[in-house]
Length: 462
Ligand SMILES: Cc1cc2nc3c(=O)[nH]c(=O)nc-3n(C[C@H](O)[C@H](O)[C@H](O)COP(=O)(O)OP(=O)(O)OC[C@H]3O[C@@H](n4cnc5c(N)ncnc54)[C@H](O)[C@@H]3O)c2cc1C
Image (cartoon, rainbow, N blue to C red; front, side, top):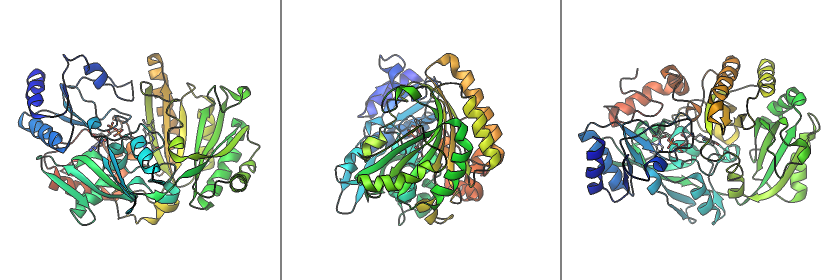
């Protein structure tokens, strides 16, 4: 089947078609998480919408399993499936910014860095994740949060339209005016409804931002979290700060005496004034819970902040992650964080609490498929290592940590922080009361569940 598919698709597509016999195959099937090693029957690196349509039709006519790859960042490797026809969207990477309407039209295989770079040229940006290499596709369809979330909401709150290739190979535009049911479902429902070949986003005036990093000794984690849980939700929308437990990387800007030290900290992004005096005022409260072991704050172009972690966690590491939403940080949760910071298995392993309040709370709970508008933080526990031999240790740490913390959460997590092995109940939980409505949209647009390599919403609504 694979060999036939390679030859047939080559005749149909403008983009590259890569099969197991081709020299580029092993490189083409590598995804961000090196823990996932699977072999598609054929990789269709589509060049445009017509290629995507041809690939979808080919898979259906030949009864092939279909997988869709955007940026390849999914933790559980949802885009990489043994024996499948993989639609690889990395050939559809382009961005067109219209400064007059403050909008960006973005190819469905683009990475966040593509959008950030082009929009920044016009002094504009839209909220997305914190790594430049994450795909706009998976991130947007799952919700999308990052440094601009408190100021401008989730990525889906800024999505104006998407072009989608449906399961029968037809193309639709989903927006507030066209296919509004589909547009509602796309904003949080993951890749369940079709292949998004482009996204249109609203942009906001964002140029230099005030970037801060504050680190404290782990003995102060209780005081810091007690302060953070009050300080951030009460802070103005223009201040974002995600809390993290981590090990200090051995390099600048960190002084040598804290290299390799376990710490807790906050990574800040201020879209307010970035002059020295304003930044000093904004960040003066960081001394309140305990004296930091490190603090810096400086103006930085927004794309520089967005690529700040790229080198620290490049493609090709072992990853295992789990997440949950939180509407409070309880004393019991603080104890769990303290314990698992002490037990952190590798220097890259980490836990983050991303704020999803402020502007993200001003969108109604029924307005999009994102079902946790009442959450204040979207938490993720990431076991990370360059060593395959440490795969089991990072997985065990992440699962144990998650199990200890889960009772102190809202009972479900962000769909983009779910692994492929968490079970269907977790998918239902992330969509809460929206699941049945999502299943109805699924029945309309993908009744045969062609797009099922995702956190699957079944047409039957099961
Ligand atoms: C290092 C790292 C940092 C991250 N940081 C953040 C963050 O700050 N904020 C945040 O919100 N999330 C973050 N994430 C999670 C991220 O949003 C998800 O992993 C997301 O699924 C990645 O999308 P992708 O397109 O790169 O992934 P892929 O693995 O390519 O795809 C993931 C899923 O989306 C589907 N999909 C992808 N593109 C399309 C498309 N165009 N049309 C239809 N379906 C598509 C795939 O079929 C698959 O089911 C991070 C992930 C990593 C690895």
